[in-house]
Amino acid sequence: MSRSRVRLILFIALAVVQLAAAAGAIIRAEVALRSGEIFRFRLQPVDPVDAFRGRYVALRFVEDRAAVPAGLPQLNRRKIYVPLRLDDEGFATFGEVALDAPAEGAYLRLRSGPDFTDENGDRRVSLTLPFRRYYMTEELARGVDRRLWRRGQRPAWVTVRVRAGVGVIDDLWIDGVPARDWQASNQPEQPPAPQP
Image 1 (cartoon, one colour):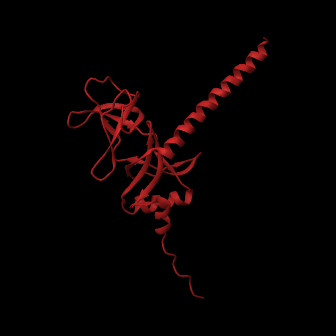
Image 2: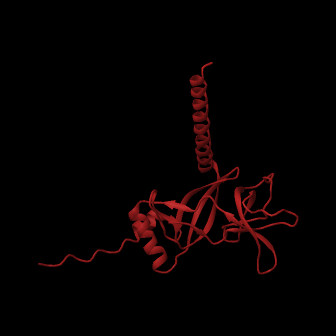
Image 3: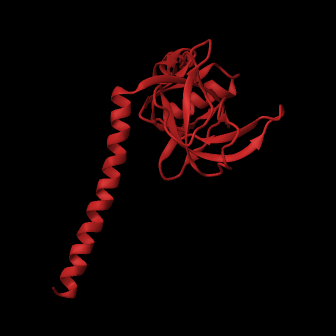
């Protein structure tokens, strides 16, 4: 076989592998979005802009740490599994991290941040959540930012669909209303037109 033919075959194989990896990620997210269990995560205010992807609402979660059981090695930047629990108000909280997927119940497959000891002396780990941005049109994102965070913080959360360790944002909620509907219902009234 000629050298150029081998290169062509290797190029095609590499292209197929890259397309398969991208397609796999898209399929996992779509399956989670269509059939995943819904969890609500509380938010804190943040509002940046991505020069390449556009305007978005940055999601800063109230809870983004989990307990580490005794006996686990240092977890810095390791793949971990975190079970999801519900608090008394129906919001998601995190159970103790594990190195293997739980046999039952909803969980997220994440990369851990650094380990640390909290003020009570308990070992905890920061979680790198994969859903930290909620993209909206520039007009909607700017309006949500201005009305949500700058005029006094309002209750906000995201619903995330979770299936087999994959979490995908379903919607952003403000004052119990989806963000797009909330933005439309909170438009400032237009001042009356000046009389000639």
